[in-house]
Image (tube, rainbow over all chains, first blue to last red; front, top):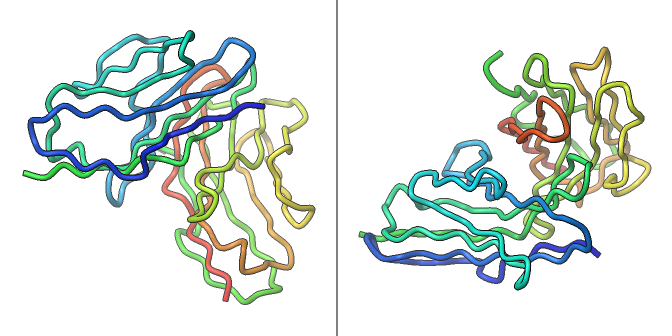
Length: 109
Length: 113
C-alpha cells in the first residue's frame, strides 16, 4: 500500500541552525515526490518536486530510493521558514497526491 | 483569474443539511482535484477530474459525497445529510494536466453544528 510518513509533528529550531524534515514513503512503482508548504493564513503551495532537482528558498530534497526517503533540508533556517510542510507522493500516471501528516516548523530568533 | 478560487470561504450549517462547495480552477487547467484537510486525518484526496475522462472517485468517504465538473471548468462538491465528522477545510486544486504541479485554492472551511 502507498504511504507517506512524516515522523515529526513539530520541529523547533533556532534561526541560523540547519533544519531537516524527514519524509519516508512506501510505493512499489516509480514514485514522484513533492514538498508543499503552507505559511500562516496562506494557501498550500508547491515548494519542491524531486524531478526538478532545484533549490527553492534555500531548501533542497534528494530522493533516496534505497532508503525510500525524500528528506527536506536547509542549512540555515530563517524566521520566515516557519510554516507547515507536507511531503506528498504522486503515484504512477494519476495526478492525485497522497500527503503525509505534515510537520510544523517553528524558527525562533 | 490568477489562481484557483473557492467559494464560500466559510460555511456553517446544521447537521443533516446539504451543502455545495464551488471551485473555479485556473483557466486552461484540465485537471481538477478535491482534498479534505481535517485535524484527525490530515490532507486526504477525495476526487480527481481529468479532461473528459471518468473521474477518479476513490477517495470519497461515503455516498453522501459527490462532485461534478461542468464544461470542463467549474466544479461543485456536494455533501448530503451532513454529519459533524464532515467538518473540515475542503481544498480544491488544479493543474495543466495530470503531470504538472497542482495549484491550490484557499479552501472552504465547513463547520457542522
